Length: 336
Image 1: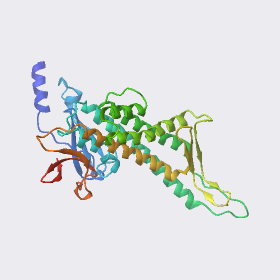
Image 2: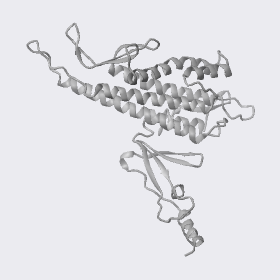
Image 3: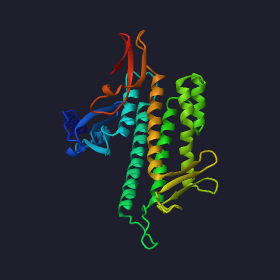
Image 4: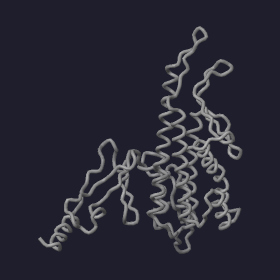
């Protein structure tokens, strides 16, 4: 068989109808599909996300008829997860949309939103693990007898908190890189992004106000990572396991950040970790809304905006809260 005949045979196979079983019942039903720039495709299930790859992605010259189509799980969380909805799926709604008019590398933007999602999910997994071990240790704790006590402990506390901080900071770095896809700021620190937004839109603009409000926290996360990776007397993280307080009560594990610019007083580990993770997610979601609001495709004389959906308008198979709106008949109506 000639090369041309072989390519024709492979082409017939590749161009035929495609069916594929993606995941299993434990993933729940399919909630949707995300196609990015005609290059990437994702199947969103209730409890998982899969990347779909085709034989032509691997063998574009169509030289091997044995190359299969397939799928690969990228995270074990799906549309049921608020983190998934408020990161990757929100990026899809806002940027992978004909309502968005900015000139961007869409694949790069969506890839960065996936990085944010993955890093936050990994950090939250560590947070939940430490919470379970914290609770298990408390259950096994017995009150002192004859002035002696076996203190409970959280195994691997220091190492897990360090990894948590690294995951959180990786997420914020991906968010920073994502902002550079829309704006020309080149300074490595968040203050450069804040200055760029204020230069473009003015101090009174809502986006400028948001950039100013988010910068201290994002700088805190960066400094927090430096404290755990490069500790010194003047900047470090103090992690304490269970301890007996002066009043004789059992003190829970705590975290304290020693840093001249961004200190954090001693706080219970169970409070600190979820607060940090949830604030990064909140910053990312609102930041995307502000970016999209500055790049809305025009539609005649109709006014359009980006914002949060009322709770009763959020689709039942997703937790995405952001949307484009259009002003029609004296009210805002969801677009798309």
